[in-house]
Image (cartoon, rainbow, N blue to C red):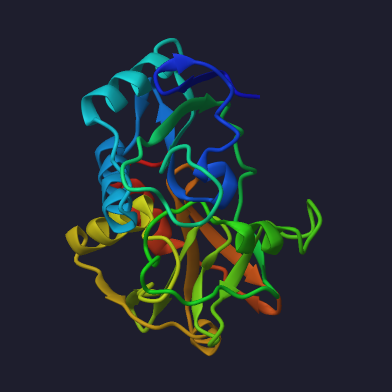
Length: 268
């Protein structure tokens, strides 16, 4: 249940029916953790949103107004999940956007539901991610691949699914980035064709460099995980979560994940 919501700065739970985000997924979103009354990594979320707007040619929201609206919906909360949506705006029928459109924005606060403790059980997803370098990295509203992927299993069967692209490269989990430790190197997919450049992913890479861990962003294939000594996934809300099993593959160590979580103070 949504705890607070603003649409273009006004308390509301409605957007126009001809909004292009609703009609075509023409927009972007951010999901961030509110903890101890502060939005974690807020600057990074705002920067990724601006980057996505520039990539898609969407008029970005005024940053001062956006920050004020975030402060407004979180004013009386200590913990929760903040979601920001920016769409190209309302328009007529047809894919082609008109010349000058005013973007719409939604800022909402949702309850935080703690995840179960312990390492995760993963499966391979059947559905694959399409390659499109123009959309790679940004968090656009088109998430049907993830919706269908999460529909492949029932609640409680596994905790998450890993997704490959159409050429068979490992990209991500359905709602998280993935890291593997191989030969004492922390490896994560380079996301040059698809996937989201996660805010937590970036923080993990920075923390690893400070800890003097070798890091590599490179193509990752399923067979690479067979030789990994450790696997974990990351996202901005859940933080860093170790993986215990991926179907028949198993891992018993979480040393690197624990060091990174401690370095980023994610143990709240």
